[in-house]
Length: 462
Image 1: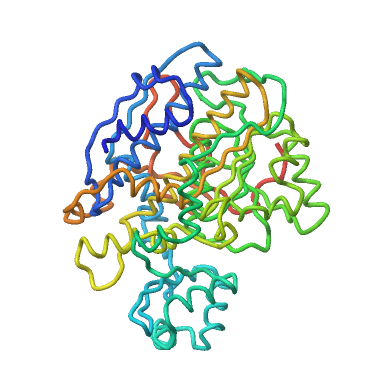
Image 2 (image 1 turned 90 degrees about the vertical axis):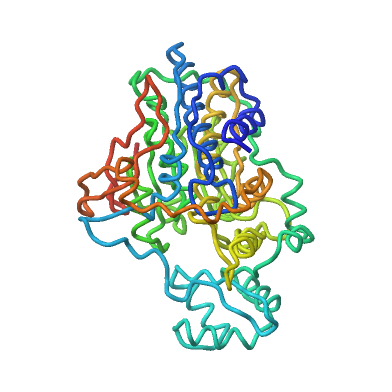
């Protein structure tokens, strides 16, 4: 599938005006990175959809239409933004714990561990009863059958995935639940008056749109970052006790302010309710139901703030027996057959992930796209809205849009080869070299108005 057809699928599923697609120019073709999957089409289409939705919201304020252009090489650079990040001309930041990776089990299967958070690592070591080293973990895992270990770790609330073929994945109840869902959902959840876009900077598509970003790691933060680069006022909210990965805070914090709010305390919950009352978009990437237990589910937010656009990002989707299972991009790739397919195509001795966190980034852009479509609907018909996306739904779509048999032979792309896609900004972290936004809009330039900030650097206020 070409990027143009992929974009048309997204735009049509959202029920948007098909004539707007004539304003988009996409260039480049797969494979742009070494993969049998059409990662470039995924990148170009999801980023272009975001840009086109921003242009459409700007049109509601100004009456002006504008063109959107996306080059695939720039879109793929955006999909690898954390990989190209540099601080003070230093080496690439470490993004992974040494224990994270693939391990062979007693019955000849493979399992992937995800141990980037300290408590996840310690939990795995406790289950395995071994020391903290890849060699010790490998030896311990060789005493387990793959499916048993996969279930044991999931039951313990830890992060792992048995490597499955696409056919094995398709037989699971979770895969069948995902198969019954569209790529994304934009659902009206309450009544509210029409809210036209507020007067603001005509050069920023989302001027004066307020976004609360309650997410960490990649998919959710990419969504908030995408809204920020189109001019939204994005306030990132972290819990003071929750772990983070420093380079991802930097990469995905560009364009945002950052505040700490402890939802374990009544005062923190009251602060968030106050913020939500003044927000347009409430973006969250906790497991389904987690925030609702604190009083911040979509229905509660629609009562607190009629007209809210509530965006939910999850790993395995909101339906099915795995809806509460912890997950990350690479685990969804492993569980759903993507890592197995890449291994088989390239003839590798062990499973192989995509050459970027494609499910994370695509899901993030789809979340931002859905938020902007919902804002446009609020501006024309009113209502409160709920947007739902998941890594697993995005992965299913990637697997459906076709493969390139020898795509894995494409050369990798070094940071020097995308130097024109990067820019440096001064920040509290030092000189940050990061990837620029990939979409180009001819009336509303896309850029980060703020450098990345340390967690809690700002007040929890608008």
